[in-house]
Amino acid sequence: MITTLAIKNYALIEDIRVDFNEGLTIITGETGAGKSILLGALALLLGKRADLGSVKDASKKCIVEGHFSIGNYGLENVFEENDLDYEQQTIIRREILPGGKSRAFVNDTPVALTQLQALSPYLIDVHSQHETLEVVSENFQMEVIDALAGNGSLLKSYKEQFEDFKKTSEALSALKLQKENASKELDYNTFLYNELQLAVLKKINQQELEESYETLNNAEAIQEALANVNQLLDAEQIGTLQSAKEARIVLGRIKEFSKTFEDFWQRLNSAIIELEDISAEVNNSAEKIEADPEMLFQVNEKLQTLYKLQQKHSVSSVSELIEIEQQLEEKVNTTLGLDDKIESLEKQKVELKKTALNTADLLHKKREEAIPTLKKKLEETLVPLGLPNARFQFELSPSQEFKSNGTDVLQLLFTANKGLAFGPLKKVASGGEMSRIMLSIKSVLAEYKKLPTIVFDEIDTGVSGEIANKMADILQKMSLKMQLLSITHLPQIAAKGDHHIKVYKEDNNEVTATHLKILNEDERIVEIAQMLGGKNLSEAAIANAKELLN
Image (tube, rainbow, N blue to C red; front, side, top):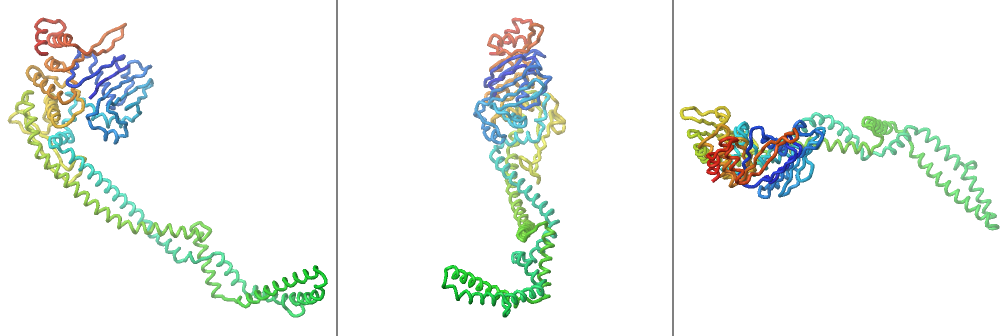
């Protein structure tokens, strides 16, 4: 319920603050006094876009602030879903800054207008005779039936199942699109992968392959060079080894005479051993080297294949090619594995659809059971409101199309008079009938669910006499279970209020301002008497006002 409304610098309001209580609060005032200003301020709290034109003084900040007691509303999940800070005493504030920029706050935390709009239906429901869109809305009508059917927990289960079905359907569509796009690339990726696989990259040492090619390609020159080296090292008389060995014999004769000569001999001996090893290895290599055109062709083929692959993939090493091969393998396998995933999701989708349809069927059955009760209550409520022949016809039929509240399609038909055919409510009901139907629906709803604060803006327009009394009785009965605010011109309804607020205008220093005043018992008598007989109070009007209040 709303407990406080504070308004600064809005329309004709300079600075007012009014406290609200439980039960039925009546708001009265002459035409043009500013009752619509209150509704405009409330609309800002409910997420309406701000308009600088509604600010009293455009050079100053406009502030509208509402305090709400929501501890019994069970709105924790609503706050969480909309990323809002939950407080049992919640404060909503709208600010319009000079220049027209608007800001919104929930519990002193800045919020987007969309967050405020998502929260507001759980706090206040503003209804006037001219706002009939809600009552003709299929979703609203279904909500009323569900309230009577006690479908709360079943609806929660269905919505979770429907959400799972939607997510699975979306994932399946995305996967099919992925497959469609991947299939276009599959052949090319498979070709690239096979090409790399045929090269057996993991067994290739590029450096060794290049050395092997150079060796085979220059076999004759290498053989000639090695033979020359071998001759220079080990040829009789002229070979380096032969000369070194002769030198070693000579040094051997004098090595015992000095440590220096001993070192010379040792160093030369080591050199001879190394030269002998070199000579042996050169000889061994020379024997291995032979011209092999076929081997040269094979090595060249491997190298050319390798170079082409590196050029194609813009890399310079075998390791980079191996990495690309692994990436291609993953892409190919992913594409080939999509069919299994798609098949799995399709099975999952079928099961989820079946579960959701079963729950939707239960909802349908419970709705069918609740409709006769709702029909009877609405028709009975409308009798004292001047519509004794009003009749409703609920046409509820299941479909295969999932909606947020099930699969049912609902059409509400209505006739206000005997002998007239039923027609769609929005086409056959007049404005006055529509407002009374809405009041009847709200009064029935109040018996079955916790409703937010309802503001009725002159819902009693066009009503008078005994019908006004009956309407007042319904409002009073509803207010026992919820907070009601009723803007009215009817004394019968004004007298039924638990609290009474008067809206009036005053001219001060050529400036007109709107004010609010909470009336005491004596002031209420005067206000209702004026509603009955005008400004010139008569004893009869006062007596009538007292009688209405009693």
